[in-house]
Image (cartoon, rainbow, N blue to C red; front, side, top):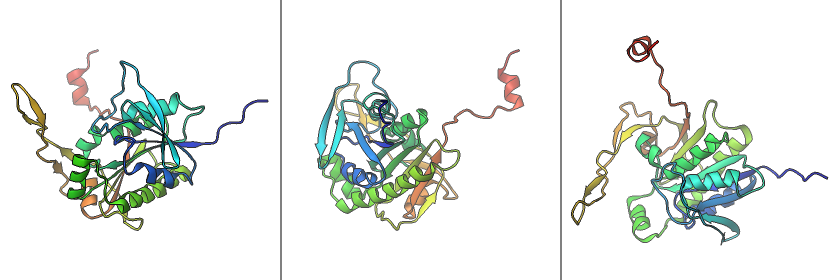
Length: 270
């Protein structure tokens, strides 16, 4: 007798690691939708984009996070997504959910740098619907997280997980917005289930200088001087966050530009 097909399931990953304060609340909110499996970095891998570990070996351990078994991988978010989709389990997931990230991934500069987004892109490249969730923190909460790994604000993680679960349930039911390969979702620090949700463009942004001289000869260290944005009409995701809205940004992965006749004449050769 042939084995019964495994029921459809959801793959969860993140870039903040196995101790992310958002992980267990998110798993609880997704579990009523479908079977959930979590494969996450063993330690924080923020700003990793879609890097994959081509060289060396990756160690993985199964841990218990409250009532959930979680696979912790010594690798990057895209590694977690790839192993979760293709290698670790008897079947591929039906949905990839990445996040909820500690801090926003709004605007082009942060979007392209984000490990949370990178894992979702790995899912989209596999032909699966993929969601990237991120939430803004108040300045003092973010500083405490960065310096002491203290999550604080438990209501924030519960609210963010509830919103993420609602959006994931809609994608599970009827798919992504038409034409989208993935959905990037950014939530304000005061997010709640009743917070307005708006479709918003990916804000044109640049973070400028990223490094400053450090102690020691020929040494440089991270120092972000601030984000520069170009959105005079306020239609982008960063503006939506500033208005206290949840920003929903459908993303296509078609990156090639339309080539007009003048450029064909300049560059093509018969």
